[in-house]
Length: 190
Image 1 (tube, rainbow, N blue to C red):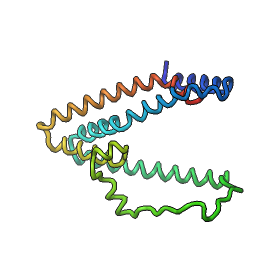
Image 2: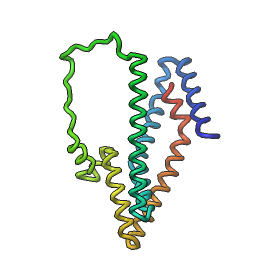
Image 3: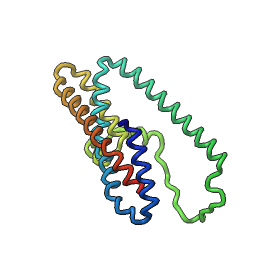
Image 4: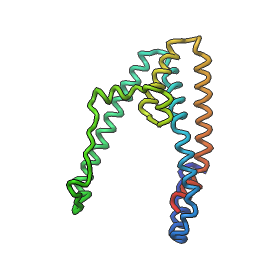
């Protein structure tokens, strides 16, 4: 059975149980919580190992630079399209119309300037970034690790093999978790 079919079945079963059982469907909440934890468990090692292998498998740093530039351009374009869609939909649907917030009910947070944002991309501690799930810092370290493996060449072959094995293991683990999708979606919808 294909993944989209499993998700659709889980969605329909969850909606059906939610409609029939009403508040008693909350008994399935632990399954939904377990599913979310399984997904969160995979994120850091999956992204880290995949990026290290991707960056170290390029072989030529110029090729990595071209791929990085294309990726950045793609990211900026898709972000711009998403912002435009959001602005058009907000203008069309006028969300929040008639809703008023008292002036003193919240404090405005200051946002960091561009230089601080760029500095914060580099982790002060790789382990702290991984523990806190700071994905931008994890991505930065993974790319530097991949580039270093490429530059080291033959002496880093063992490290490359380790990360390749870790990435493959994470892909398989993701498959195992995804097989849990119908149960997870069912439990989340109930």
